[in-house]
Amino acid sequence: MRKARKLDVACPNKICRTFNKIGLKNIIRKGKQQNGTIRYQCTDCKRTFARTINTPFFHKHLKKEEIIRICKMLSEKTSFRAIARITDHHLDTIRAIATAIALHCKKFNEYFIKELKLSPIEVDEMWSFVKKKKKIA
Ligand SMILES: [Zn+2]
Image (cartoon, rainbow, N blue to C red):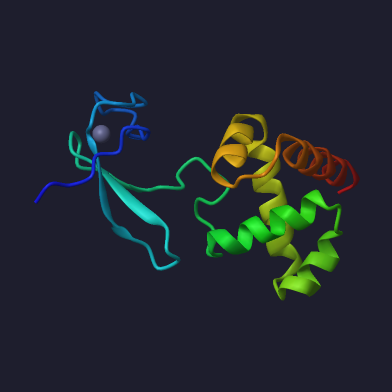
């Protein structure tokens, strides 16, 4: 069976010879996680990893759609408490997501624009809001 090779994904294993190199056809799909996140495997070092590794979605139990919803509310300057009430998540969960997003800030602007189809202005607004919140906390 021919497996789909992902050309835009690089192996995250620092000791792998293909580490951080894209376009080598060494990444294949390898099932899904419980929350629907796709897993990949490097055919070189055999390591498997979540598609969301190095993104704010990594190690979050919430579904991607739910995190996107929260991001959009953050970009609308909705308060953490209001988001917690609307989404039925714990306030700490919302804080954790906002913190994860803030930490990944600049590096993932492109990711948010490309994958989540937010406009650059929406992304900008989300960041400035998250930064403001961090100063207060
Ligand atoms: Zn590898």
